[in-house]
Image (tube, rainbow, N blue to C red; front, side, top):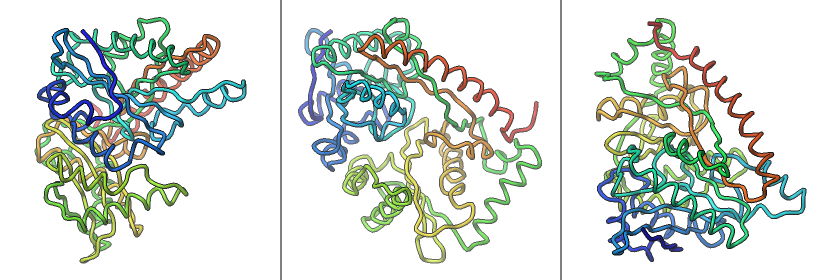
Length: 385
């Protein structure tokens, strides 16, 4: 096995990339997803995200895997927060940045972080050696360049468990809320699994949206026109503007994504009469829906729940998708039937003193997260069995 670094997706090349990842529908593995990030200037010069893709080949140069990594000069857009670690480094007169992350930019979605023809779904444990071998490469590359750390974000649990067998690697656990399809026939069937009180509450939320004169439309990306994408982008930026920030992704990214992998894009638009008032953007494959971005230009009661959760659940049921990952955080998801799940990240910290301190922090945090995970089960809306 050999490995080589590339600082742009085009230098890897479409043919080599597609050969490496094999027959996977996972949207975040697609060449065109990463190409859109680069060509839209959502990552690259001036963004603090500098790609270094690791191409793995057999000894005969046959591509077998891609690992997306990025040199980072800040910690924005990662969703596994290490601001306090960076502050501690700075207080001791040390440089935390640049660091390396092994992740999908701006996407707090658990999934494979080695895109490989050997394991297109990332579910097989047979090819876990790819993760351990690449982890060693990451560590060697960091030492050669005197970087503070590398971070594998939102990896699958079995890959995390394999990597933490290495004593120099730290394991961090957090909690998200995901929806699972248990052979629901339609939304009526789904709500029938709720307790009576929770079922009434969910139905009232949907009725409240309709009573405000709101109706919703779902469209696939390859059905969208430029005006609809532009409206969504206005909503996307409005969400960040409320916090005095600017969205990480450019409008050109969304336009290019629609042009290239529009069959993996879902846009939910909310209308009041003929006027668009909100939108929610998702990606999907043949197994899961991945909720990513939402925004509105006018506030309406319960519209966020409808556009971001109920519409996605309904889409999953209609399509036979088994899983809906709506993004990070948000206890409000629980009442709509999203169940607590663990997410996992792996961290290499070069400085032994900081590594020991951060390991203690991760252990304490994990204990708290596991207690929280258990407690939130009591808030789920489903009937007790």
